[in-house]
Length: 291
Image (tube, rainbow, N blue to C red):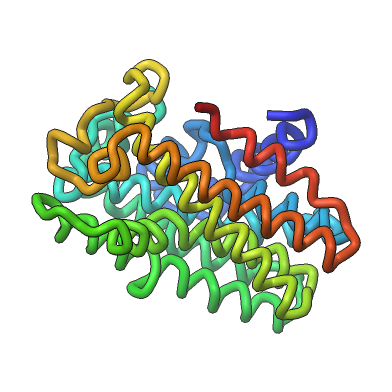
């Protein structure tokens, strides 16, 4: 990461470490929630929101940071639940035992539930204008809920053992992975009260970035090692999950990745043209993909 992204990541890390425990009333639950939330990670989603706010001339006030960090709480809930025995049954996350391995499946489930609901507390319990908070809460619910991330996870479960078409695979991941990245960009537009045209371009960038993120993750499951990824690799093929390398082969998946990145760069250029602002900072996020 560049210095500017590292600074935004540090803002997120600091806010989470300082404020998460204040809103939890039970000691073991707090430990479980903090265990996964403070375990590191790229913090791409909240930093995308914060970077977008900055690029569009907004101030990174405490209220903006709180609303943005709500997305990391929600993302962490999804990881905890995704790792559970009834879902992917993973033993490692970021090189450490998964939450249910550390605290048991029941407490891990509750930690996820706590983070999900706390996310909406943070996105609405701040000093931002009422219309901004309402829009953020509505869009976050849509992105995370049964027409977004949860639906994508359901499609993923039902798709095991079946061979999906490329369009069906794209749609699955537009929900499962892309929905929260779509929201991350949209949230920056909502906070800075952008016109519809700008918000549309922001979400186009988010959608393309989300697709690239999932393709890259699928490729790393094939090409990387457990040490590099901090989790077991090669599981997707063994569980007959639908992935881009599984459907298109490694080279086909790489081509799909480059196509998604080209789409993101097109939206980035259009944003700069329409707003008169430089969106070069998005290059730092696109540099995540190294093949």
